[in-house]
Structure formats: structure tokens, C-alpha cells
Length: 323
Image 1 (tube, one colour):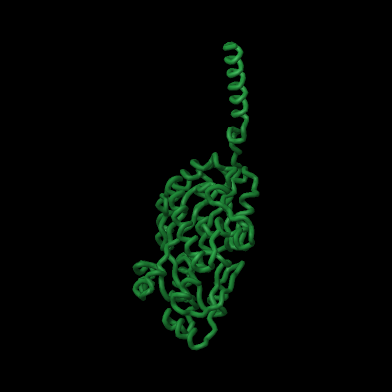
Image 2 (tube, helix red, strand yellow):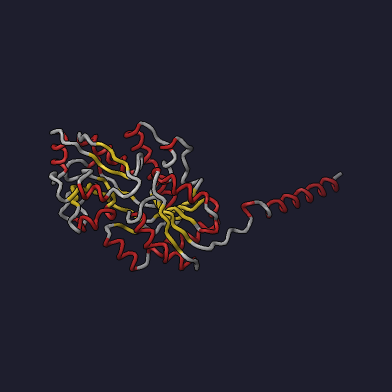
């Protein structure tokens, strides 16, 4: 009887061992034929610019070709779906904010994507500041003047890349704090032409997204959503010094891989960290008023978790719902 039991156990263990070596998790990871950054915003936007700075250095480390593909619209859902549906060998990664991942499907009444389950966090791309920008020839030359114009009955509107995104949440929060009546205008393509021409009166945007136009004299920054003034825009007051310290916000983008590329998580993170530490990349970031964030996988996971808590709270306060 003992012999039969031992034989049974040996046979069972052999079957389990044989099953585990052929399970999906143990299969050979897909060979990367390229590295493709999918961006949920139009060409020229901040995510697009950063993607084009980073993709070639990372692709060289991976020894494959690199490219950037723009899939704007639906608050990031189009880009997220494209990455999840892509052939793993295409090396498709999503470079965007958490609103492009965690909240993109919520707006269309679909199951919310989980950035830690549906996707694999590769790394943090940057930490950035945000500004309130308007057309350079706009009559309201200060945030106070913009509020006064609204109270005087002047129609005010602001643009974002979609309902429920970070820019939308920050804009609604700001309008409530200032008592500013303003109409939301969501854009699939760039809102910059309408902002510069005065068709919309202001936007809340990451500093790099509007810095060239501010330096070029086509836009004016009314305030920075920061504790202190930004070095490259030292004449622009911080929102804290204007008395609205509860409006301070620091953002940033992340790089996500689909779960099908989980075997590459460590390598992708290493390639990103090495790229972010390159002197030429650091210099470009500094000129754009953003900070490189060469975090490891666990640090990235913690950063995502903390940012999700903040955004969930903002969505609940502004929209009355979270994910």
C-alpha cells in the first residue's frame, strides 16, 4: 500500500511538473521585433514630444526599430485599446497619464482598466508642473481679471483633451474655487489653435505643452499650479502666492506595457531608466521645465498607487464618482 501511495505521488508530481513547464506563464516570452510608443494625444502634445525623445534611445538598447504612433480621442480609450490589442511582438507601449488608462473607459460606461493588472507599469517618465494659459492678446491679463470678466457676464470657455481627464478635473476644481463660470470644450485634436486665436479663453496644461507658445509670445501664463514660481517662467505667479494653495498640483506621465509583455517589465524599466539618465535627455527635460524620474519598478508602482488615490478623490469631489 505504501509503495502504491509513493508511486501515485511521484506520478502526480511528474504530471504537475510537466503541466507547469507548458503553462502560459512559463512559455517563452514573445520576441520583440520593434518598440512602438502609442500616445493618446495629438502630435506636438507633451506626451508626443516626450515619446519622440525617449523611443529611439530605448529602441537602441533593445536593438530593435522604434516608432511613435498617435491614437488620440475618447480620453485615452482608443490608445489603451490599441495597446491591449496589439501583437506582443510589436512592443507596443502606452505613454500617457493615469487618466488615459485608469479612467478612459469609465467615460464610455465600460469596465475601468486597472493600470496594475490590465497593464504592466514600466516606469515613470517625468514629473511636471501645470500652468493656466490664455491667448497673449486676451484682455484678461491676470487670473483675477479672468474671474472679474466672468462675473461681468463675459462668456468664458476652456479646452481640454477630454471629459474626466486630469486637465478637466483641475479646470472644474479651479473654477469652483475661484467662482468662475466657464464652459468646457473637449478636443480630440489640439486645442492650441483655438486658444491662440481666442475662441476659447484658457486651458490648464502641463508647462511643456504650452511653454514654446508662451516663450514665442502667442500665449500668456496667468499662474502656475505650484508652491513656488517656476524657474523658466519666473514672472508668472504661483497659485499659492495668489492665495489658492489648495489648487497646487504636480503631474507626470508613465510608460505602460500590456500584461502580455510582463516578461519584459524589468528590461523595459532598465532601458527607460538608462535613457532618462542620459545627459542630453536631462538637458532637454530641464529646458522644458520638467523633471526626469528614473524610478525602478516598485517605486513606479508606489507612485501610481499614490497618484490614483489623489485622482480618485478629485473625481469624487468634481464629478461625484470615481472608477
